Amino acid sequence: MQMFLDLFACWIAPDQKIALENEAAIAVDEESAKAIIRQITDKEALCNGVDSSMLETRFEYLALAARMGNIDAKIAFPGMMSSKYETSVDMFVNSEEISKIKQESLRHLLDASKTGNRNALGQLSFIYWRGTHGKVDRVKGYAYLLATARLGASRLPQNQLDIWRPELNADQLLQAQNIADQIVASCCHPKP
Image (cartoon, rainbow, N blue to C red; front, top):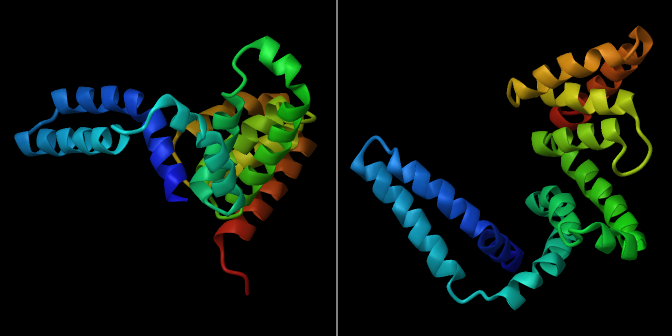
């Protein structure tokens, strides 16, 4: 599990370094800037011995960590695994493997959503709404986004609900509300 976390940290390190440097540049006090610089230094020390061949193993460690139940790995699984196939030729040649990845991604996100993880719920809403991992299911997509909004993630889910709402009829909205109630009740409230 730690190997996945370390490789994942090194994979995103270049982007994260830029964000941290920007944050340090606008830090309000010297102590905050020093703390941010320490984060950059710690990350560089961790990733110093990691080469590109080691980073390639991140997919295997990610899959292992997700299958072992790590929520962060389950949530990262769809994005990282789909990044293996960046071109349309890659996707065509590996279409059977991509189909398996999509099925496994959906399972991992559903598992993570059962804990009330708003990131997983949000990803599921778009997967169902757009049908990227199977058949389009606008009612489920709306329901998962509604559950995300009810859990208080941010204003973003509510804004997206406002955009999606007109595309559903009254019966579909009622179905979505019932599904959202079930999602929230099963993940976030103790059972009697």
